[in-house]
Amino acid sequence: MPRSRATAAAAIAATVAAAVWTNAKWAFAAYCGRTPEEQALEPFEAPVVVNGVRLNRLLKLHPARPDGVCFVLVHGFGGQIPQWAPLIPQLSAAGSVFALDMVGHGRSQATTNPADYDNDAVLDSVVAAFTAECPRTRRIVLVGHSLGTSRCAQLLARFRAKHIEVAALVLLAPLSEPHAIDRPKSSLAAASVTAINIFRFVDTFNGPYSASVARMYHTADLDTRLRQLRWNQATPTHVVRLAMLGAKVASQSEFEAVNVPTLVIFGEFDVVTNPVPNATNLQEWIRKAPLQFVCVSAGHALMWEARDEVLRHLDSFLATHKIIAA
Image (cartoon, rainbow, N blue to C red; front, side):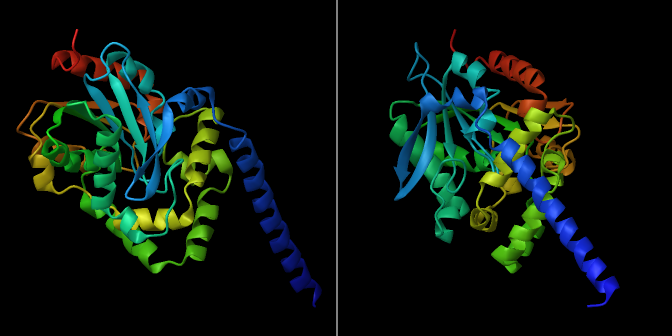
């Protein structure tokens, strides 16, 4: 082999080795274990089987009012229960809290059946798991993040069909623009698992300072970034593909049907669900009920980045609409 080609091959090999080493280093740091905030949720987590699929749920009952209002937390694409850790202590002081790792996410079973990831199947699993675990609860507040906000609008009618009152909606980093997932859907439908794995490797290159993590925060410390890296890498590739292909954003008419007090909080620097049009759409569409519209200085993961602001606005909203019994 000519010396120039040998030099080029050695340079490529060194670059690849450096890339693998860098990612391995950060992955090791990220996977050192759950943080104390995540570990504090574990006593309240347990499996629940819905349509033959084992899902992980969190249920923290209010000690004085176990059958009173319950906050039902609905995570977004690639999300999981620990992402709610900043809100759960305060919410559980006001009422019970229920959350679910959707199929393939967090500690739930990662099936390979596309039907399990269909949007209607996911919505039905939330209702089925909740009614199985909280059979006596008849009043809830739906709290969603990202794609979960769209699913909250879709869940409204489903819970009412079970004679469960939805007292309010809390929509964090809302997703309302259907075209926002059209491009990822078409790309994932055409891509092989190998191609998606290569993209995910590149997307997480440089670990906590990778594009994968950067899109979630405007500003964040290293510990926060490492935790997000672990979450981003935790979802299996086949789940990423199936979950996106099965997802469906709520229609304008579904958002227009919302007729309960609604709190919308979005991050000024959110590049995942850009506030224009995802948040601004809701100002136009939700007109049948009081709407509180709040911008905080944060990116997409605003529960972590703007925790105090989010909790302050949430407390004010619940008090204003007398959702929590004294």
